[in-house]
Length: 252
Image 1 (tube, rainbow, N blue to C red):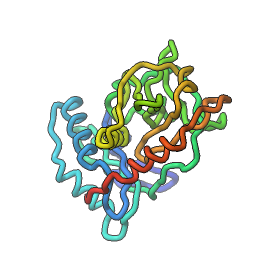
Image 2 (image 1 turned 90 degrees about the vertical axis):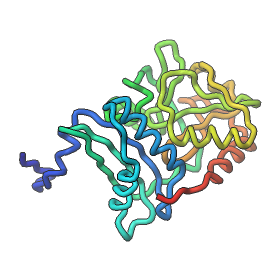
Image 3 (image 1 turned 180 degrees about the vertical axis):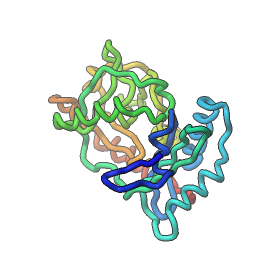
């Protein structure tokens, strides 16, 4: 098989992502060859591998692959670790420039959509990319997925959390249990801040004291739902972002 990309003949391994029937992955930010929630990333890959392929995963091979991709001269990066199925299972690691979470509150819109196997971070992301691009073309930073009845589940590439003045509320809906969400759950537990899962509708967001998003870039507050400003508790936001900043970076 010969593959040409942008007029150049590609090496045989470049065809792997195109040949893969399916796969799953995890995405992380690396600083100083360290990342937050490394144990959670490895657990995610292991669990998805067992569910999708009924096979374990050699986590040391995962770490070795990341180290190889970083080489000797890359300390800071955005890293993705894919497990792809193409006549067997393959580890596929990509390294791109690092990305930081936005520092200004985000604007969001909503769209009715439910991901297939939402609890798996799988490679079937066409709809997410499509809806995310459509939202950005309309001037929004992110789109939140809802049911036909308007119940919120997650964003195209984010989890969403809310603060009701007493507790952090996560959606009780089918969604990806994102790594940064998991990091924040344990940081909030350690800080003694109550948390709960309960259904809430997109129209309920203005009733919360704060709304925020989490993903591999970090944690960011939400300032507007379409043309409607959302409340933002500065004290809570400072505490939330401070808790995330205090999460230790683990050596890869």
